[in-house]
Length: 109
Image 1 (cartoon, helix red, strand yellow):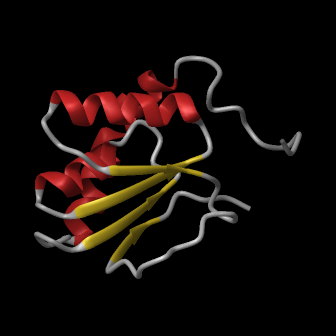
Image 2 (cartoon, one colour; image 1 turned 135 degrees about the horizontal axis):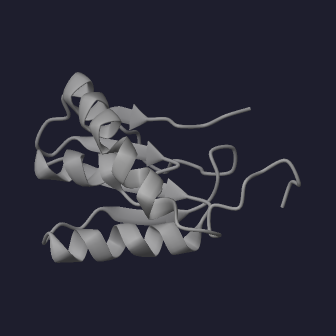
């Protein structure tokens, strides 16, 4: 891992994610994903934006370099009876196999 990168597996990111929920809501409202639309959420973390997009009927691929945060997103999706498709990777390493109509980016660098 690049020493300049933050280890999002460490600590309790869930508290920060709770604080960022209004931002995710604003991003999804602005993007207006439609039912059946493909959405790519890069650096999805605990799934705030991904889950909001699935509530609109979008088919979501969530990507994050932190496996623990993807597990949190999957568990949240299960509890809400939603199933965003999650993958693992980084913004620079993830390869799309099919195009997305909408993308949420939270990349730095």
